[in-house]
Length: 507
Image 1 (cartoon, rainbow, N blue to C red):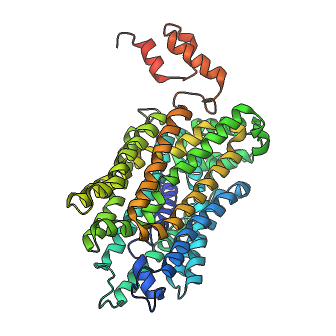
Image 2 (cartoon, rainbow, N blue to C red; image 1 turned 45 degrees about the horizontal axis):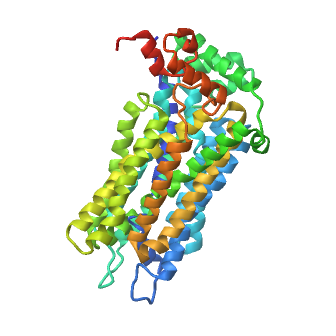
Image 3 (tube, one colour; image 1 turned 30 degrees about the vertical axis):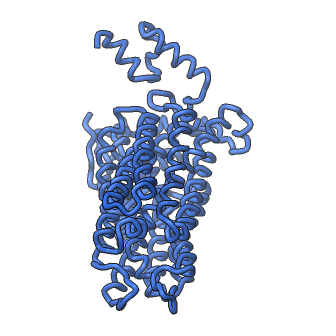
């Protein structure tokens, strides 16, 4: 049966897309505008350099890092938000974006800007509820498409934020520079953009999408109400199919014991999964993606010189990231998760080597900035199709259901803490040497590549939570060896490649 999209479903998907858009707009809204903020706040007043001094490095690092600190705090709140309806929590998330954005946009000192971005950061952390909301309203057969909405609109938000900040049309200089009203409107407007998307989302939630998700209603035993909502979302002809699927999922969840993280650690299989995924969550940030979203303009100016060409090139990174994410949506189901992770981070590592070593080798040669920029663009492409687009898909599949809630929450927390640490540290290091920053990021990329190659196991074609189960691993190997044994894989979906070989042995 073809999946039908009713008006209510479109509005629900729009709410999810706006939540992801606010995320992207928030994490990149002090990038190109950062030096204008420093001048406006007078963090380098009386210094020979009006946009880069020890005080600005500290305060800008804290302001940028506050978003990620807030996100880490928000991620810890996800676990205790489970009892509240999704609509209520989405309202909370959007109000956090609105309050944080307005406070940041109207900031007259460091304290207001720090607090505003911290509050917005909590919204970013809680924004992880958006994919859950999307999964709970979509048709089960359309989940792979709805899961793409979140990542796609985050990257689109990055592009919009970068494009808005380009309106400055100039860079800050130490000679004859005067901050204009236009500059103030642009940098403060970039802080306000997430509030605009969140206001629209709140209006839709309050006046249009006025019901809980079918999954929530089924969990609470409200069968009749759940069927009414399913009809609004998918049409009368899909009610039985969607209800039965959600009901099976609900029963499976209720029958699954929920282990605490400490209890799970006592099981050697669970412990192995948890430790490896925590490292993977850390690697995603340690390779430097948040450094690029927060400081890429500053890095490009170090490599290319202080001009609008540097600003345009750095903003182009966000566009490349968006395009790569769009491409990933069409091929994500064709290959294994580990395949994407390995090739993605391998690609990133090679190109980060170009950015890291071109200047030490070429010194002041004309080709050095070009090679460095190519390296940075190559890195972002590899990240988008690897760690960026796949990590959270992988984590959603690798955890056994009984450990998923506790382990996933901590993995998200670790991810955001690493983001805050890398962003804060980069403020000081970039001013000292962008080559040093690139070299450190290359080292983390190389470590991540080797770690993923050795320790991360495939989840595609493997039952949920069974990738590290030695019994499943042995059966998986036996199936690959005994390709004629159809019963070995029948109904188990261990490996689509094996099934294809059995069904089409001559191919």
